[in-house]
Length: 71
Image (cartoon, one colour):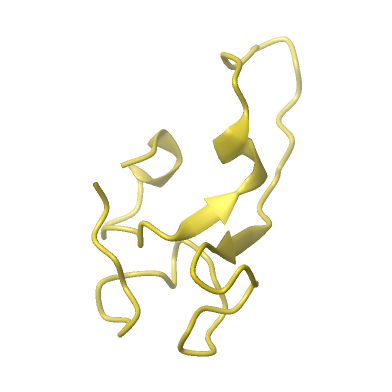
């Protein structure tokens, strides 16, 4: 599970993506956070999942029919 999701009380779908997932650098505490809370689904390449619901870590939980287990 990604560090960003460890505070959530549930697993987050493996298809949730956001831009900082692709950064190749270590976090720099001297740089203010980007607040990059724009998420999309790897299956649909959209802000909506296959079930038509919004993609957000809080929503992309095991109860959704399109949920994919994290690695």
